[in-house]
Image (cartoon, rainbow, N blue to C red; front, side):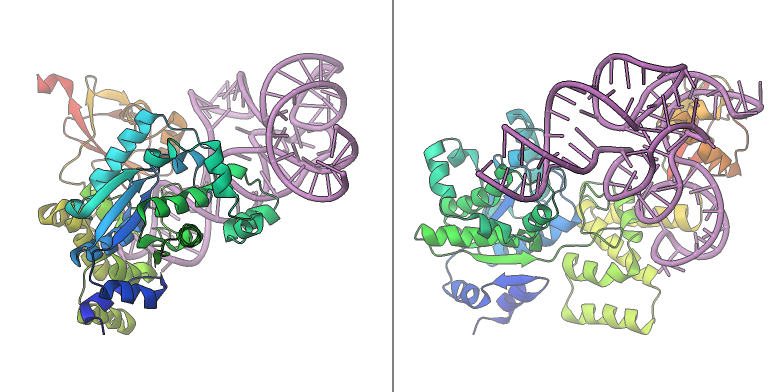
Length: 400
RNA sequence: GGAGAGGUGCCGGAGUGGUUAAUCGGAGCAGACUGUAAAUCUGCCGCUGUAAUGGCUGCGCAGGUUCGAAUCCUGCCCUCUCCA
């Protein structure tokens, strides 16, 4: 019987293990396992949705296993078929390199660098020739490919599916063969691709990898999975204030998921939160603040988290200006057109947008609503546009 | 290679010669409410600009017809379906 700790790692916050029984056996052998994690260098930014899986990798590392991170510099050129945009500009080698760098900086905030090996697909696909492609593709049928839900949906729905896209799962599967992966990690949307890896490994005479599928974190909109293209994401490099604010803006119903998937809690703590929520014995907002604080701490440290929280309370609950305002506008003439000011500071994209905000009562200086376009500026005044845009006004003559 | 359908704003999707900057829904933004939650209500939602029913750009791309086109014609590009 495996020890409780291992079981916990294997069962908590995981959507599915294929095949759990085999996985357990593998763990019992005691040898360090090769954990495969792929990465698409066209999307270098890591958000909390990714963190769910990275935390799990970390937990496995702590049990003594090794992560093999595969930079998908070839698959990135195809574009992940699960995305809606089919045509994706090819990345230059330079872009790929810098994206990979960006990615890894973030990746190793969660994953242990010492227990990670980084490999690039180009190391093997760089010398792949047509004969190899024919060889690889001949192992699979169109029907097999169409078994994948999103291909099928698009195909039957009259949407285009390019042949290169069908290649995507095969290349990913081939990666597993190259590294002789023991376990592949991915979101539940990666199920098909990971299973292809098992198929191909079997064909190549390897032991099929186990697959650990992580639940997809729902984004700030409370509806769709967190993703950058949907704009409902919380990036891990975001400044503390934004990260805190975004966490506060998630719907209450997501609270438990977030706690479960992103925070280290004992079973008792988690159960406590759950019952608090169910009994209405705590304002969910306070739990959310705790969540936000914990998450900001993870990526920015305690001080930053505390500051972010106090600022949040100040700005959004007490409706005051934040203590520090990064954006400034320097003026030399006190009489100014507020629309011009807003445009030049970049808080609006066009003059029309600025005018709209003004007529809707969303613009104020030092707490006083602006009603006409001509305003007089004072040194140190604070311009607020909408909920979260602040600009400090500075008199040019006074800085010299 | 042949036949047919179609390409509209961030997305979905109306609109087949003028009152269409383009119905409607979603997303987004602002305001009210509030816990930057949910729900609800109101307004906005191409650029520019005002005294204004103003100007400019715009419905795959390039031309053409017309007083006037997203809507008609020609060519091109792209997608889907069926046949081979």
